[in-house]
Image 1 (spheres, rainbow, N blue to C red):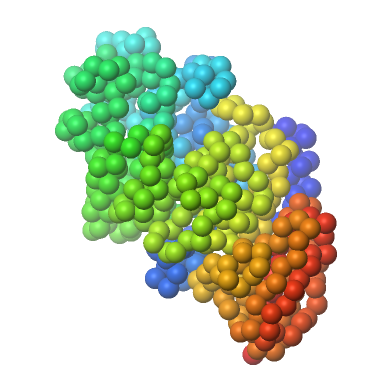
Image 2 (cartoon, rainbow, N blue to C red; image 1 turned 120 degrees about the vertical axis):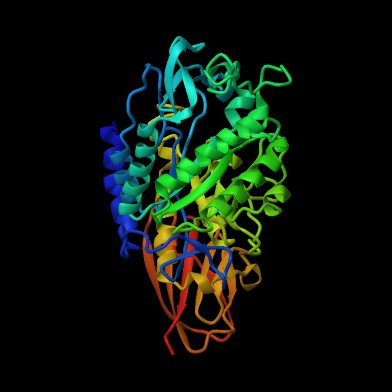
Length: 463
């Protein structure tokens, strides 16, 4: 349940979001495609789309300290996202039937359900429940998947379906014993631990052909369940180990090939490999989108996206739990799509509805609104046009500049013919001020009217 205090905070935030109000909540009109004219973004319905939003670990698989875990209130979660004007989530999967949060510096035993396969038995698994039959899918799992993706689409939210999860297998003590592919947990004689090291990381490699075949069957079932929906993306696996690279590349190509002759084709993503993964592995992949690690400055000073991949800059891979509103704007103005790993109600990890993240949540929504007011497909990171170094621009028409607290910024408006309008956003408070009209054709120095960090939006008058 959402606390009364948090509900009041949301109501206070609505005014902030409405300052940049535009049409929202419409269903996607066709699957996303990498924009040909500006491959930093996906395009849908003929327009470039900024993807931004909050995701939480249990938004698909229920998690909690009871067995079975209490159902996640997905409808309330979507309503909360809509109020914040978010348009993207990662829909998390979780491969373990239970796990302990000690690897996350907490100490809770959590149960997770449902799983893709039926627990038919008759023998008992290590947790005392019936063993899995890995040849029989649980229809309820895939019905839930389709229902949740469709419900998000009805509110204008794109969903990346996470297919596998690799972090837990590496770092949760005794994780293998809770996995359906442990030989004692299934009736199919599947043994994922060929080297007997007790970890079973071979699950996410190409080492065991029988496991790869089971995974391909599962991926087909997922694709078949949602293929005719427009608001779909896929993510192969969350933070898997670097030796998973050939397996992840294989799965990316497998989805591309499987969807090739289906009614719709959807983007496939690859995210940061932990520990020791390289961002170059992501850029070299056949993925349509990627989420990098902090190397290269994606946490503090995101590098300008050169268009090799659509980049979803995710706080999950940069902090774990962290991020702030300055990071969101810096990411946006460097041609990335900022998304937030949100503790939300604190059921899984973190504290419920922490005030320190409120400005981040609000500003992601404001960035989306601003992106909808401009011709995003024509805008590129142009550090050279502002002394503040954070500038997304369509030279001669539109400039969006981040100006740090207490600083001024020179902006090169030489390409602007005639007058341009100026508007300021205080990213701490949400205050918006009109700056009036000014003449283009030269460099101009701008001082924020606020004591806080600000966003400067300059729009040339229509010719």
